[in-house]
Amino acid sequence: MKQEKNDLDLMDKLIALCKQRGIIFPGSEIYGGLANSWDFGHYGALLKNNIRQAWLSHFVTSRDDMVLLESGIIMNPKVWQASGHLQNFTDPLVDCKKCKKRFRADHILEQRSLKPGYDKESPLDWSEIHCPECGGDLTEVRLFNLMFKSHMGPVEDAGAEVYLRPELAAGMFTDFKLIQQSKRLKLPFGIAQVGKAFRNEITPGNFIFRTREFEIMELEYFVKPSDWEKAFANWLDLMKSWLKSLGVAAKDINLNEIPEGERAHYSKRTVDFEYNYPFGLKELYGLAYRTDFDLASHAKFSGADLTYTDPETGEKFVPHVVEPSMGLERTVLVTLLAAYHEEDAPTAEEGETDKRVVLKLPKHIAPI
Image 1 (tube, rainbow, N blue to C red):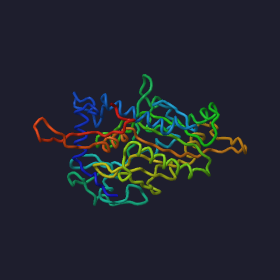
Image 2: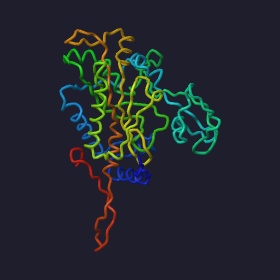
Image 3: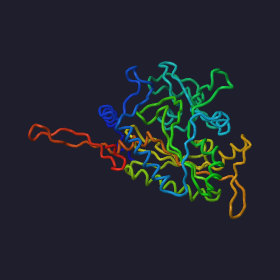
Image 4: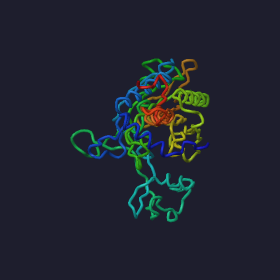
């Protein structure tokens, strides 16, 4: 896919416009800001809320097989042990010995068109790979857990450790049985949620593309094991139509089938929606087939019965899950990039024109 928008000037112009018009601006700025944290002003907050409501309408309230959930940001830490996040939710980290800057090892390899080599099955000689900033030597790769840790209660000991959720899925899995029984839901059905998540990213950046605090629009769609491929294809089409409704051009979207070995620990198939950002082709959304990994893991660790009984056959089984996951801030970013236009506008001087910036937002999400 051609990267026609690969123009960092556009990104700088958009960031400046957002600050000038009070749409999005640095948080805590009077104290020098904080590590790529951003606040949404009046128009930014309205735009964000309109996108949120449009998402709920597109994926949830317009359907009769979807229900909504709002689960807690802080959960029992056993949840994250069962889900595999305490063991597997990591990024590979390297430091430059010379300039002391910190990088994600996989990002350095991507820049050099190399496959990830921080895992034991495909080792690389990292002594031959140098700092992309100063050319200095890099440290050995180490895995860094992305979960924010805190403590509950007055005593800060290991027994009081809790975590800020890194994704929304866990609440939808732990509440699956209660929701299914209380609503008398039959497969296939989905549970949707919009809310905050937190990841202690090694290198946040590129405006609101990668931040440590962000909002996710996510749903878990529960199906019979034999029906996952049909559901996967259906949600793929729904995600495409959602982006079209935001004014995002199909030519700026690339579907990337993630190969085995690069997928998340819970996924048997993942397709990433990549967008042609000014800084390159990067992930926007993800669609994953999580099999029965999550429900089976939580059933094993908790002792709870998370099976589903087919009302027609009486068969009991653990449902499989297809998960569309969409970041709200990234949705705001691509919507603004798609809407950004410069045009010649007349000035007070007769016959003279000047550049004027116009955001051509779709009517249903425009803040004014």
